[in-house]
Length: 264
Image (cartoon, rainbow, N blue to C red):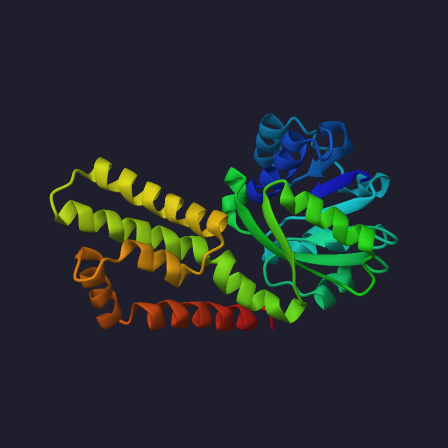
């Protein structure tokens, strides 16, 4: 697989690097990182067992570089490293930064842009990646292996990444809002906050696992719960009256539009 160097050692970098080590994709000795924050670097090492170095220029000793800095920090992080990326695979999880923009900082590198999401922190991420034409089949396989260590990985065209950002990138926030509201409904009916929260979380988890494992259409799974004239159909009527479907769809579309704005 080769050795991988991380520029940026925050939460997502920690999740990805830790996933690679825990699944045996690479050993800690084959990975290294740099972060301008000594606190972030120390936490990264404590959680992953991977060394952090004090000079980002050491990336020249590695086969691939994974960039995991905030978008506003990209120029300051990469400009001093100009010329050091030539011939390497550069993987970016920097939100909103296009392959073309990344190429301005990483001349003569092979590029792959990735959109992960926060459930990668618990090994259940959903990520998509878009390779530059220069990326090889081996490069794509490497990225799939990296991302699969913390969830699932799907290849898409770069222009689809705004939709990916809106659906799976921002999606956990929508789900957390649903969990909160579902629990609030239980509290409104007299359940304790703790019981309502546990039931809401487990219900969402179990439903997602049913959809994943049975591969049934959500409408089929919904109908399995919905008895004629019963409680579920009454609740679904209320969701329909509140334009639940339309609200969710419009939320995703709004997030995608904002992603396009930020990428300009």
